[in-house]
Image (cartoon, rainbow, N blue to C red; front, side, top):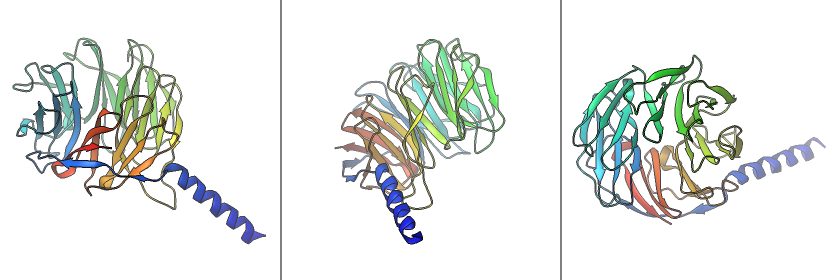
Length: 321
């Protein structure tokens, strides 16, 4: 009888593990010269042609580069601040913010030709998100320590600390509409319904959430470093697991970046060249056959079947299904 129950438990475990990944897929990839061997942390496109990548060595330099041909070629990296850059938000081809380690933030109004620096925190700024041109949020913190959330209501000229958690650092954020802000981090997701002035916890005891992507004001996804992916369909009020995290057995996933082109089609990326893909809103996931062993930090989708990934060691790849 004991052997029978152990057999049933083994079958259930294998079924659970199989439900996380439905097969493997192969992408057509093209490595692109980034002119650097430094780690690259974020990639953003303003339109089909113009995009930006940022990164750099943590304690030495924050670099940024620009493309005008859809990511096929990139400018030589320009050093902007004195520590690595983690995040960017561009309002247009000309105007945007960059931010990163030690609270470094800079603004450009001329397409990255010149920058003016700002300083409002000595702690890492991990992700920026704006609603319109005036309202913005910054998710801050490092490691497994506590972290603050900062908000701006004047287009980034001034920032105020709106929330602080002594136990949970904050890594990802999304400004959904005039009043709704969602922020994620170490084991938690918090939400504001008053334009980021106050926050309340909507999810506790979760994965170490790295970033989030909302495709509209209702549907969003968040990825965790221990492999979990969660989804919200009500503007971040509630979340459900659509890909389970790492267990004692099976494949170990460490996720760090995510992008969705619509409610159904998305990619998540992570350590050791990990990429997983869904075309059904997270009901099933396929693992991409590895094309690099580097850590992948960020992904941007051009369409439901194409995109770009960036990561460790200056890694930049265009991909197509």
